[in-house]
Length: 164
Image (cartoon, rainbow, N blue to C red):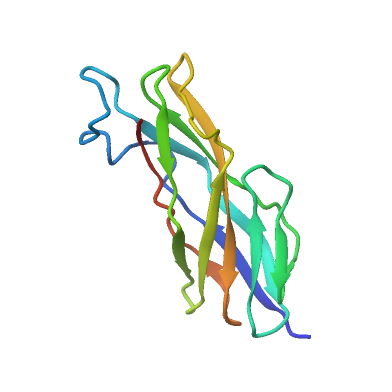
């Protein structure tokens, strides 16, 4: 049985507060209201995985914890998998909309390719900023590798936030 090492590290926004790209053109923002900000505290990290064949496989990391699950020719080699964690800041008591992509391409320096699909958060259906104007959330996804080429896979998850 041959193993192909696969380390999937999903990078989101760099550490530090990020200005929401929709803040200045958001028609739902009220005059004088603080703009929305988003800070990513933990990147989505699948830790160490391996392929036992060339037909691909997948690993899922839920937003609500519970550890990663693998399927197909992909197996878990251990390590600490981490769901993404972020914080939104803005006007206290305002409802916000958080949008994650449907699919993100990931690549490695040695030609590996995979995609992230099935993004999910632990946010309620109508998230609201608390009295301090903050809201923390977790997010997860499913990593899909369709061929036997892996590597240290990286990509960016575009997360957009605006007032509802």
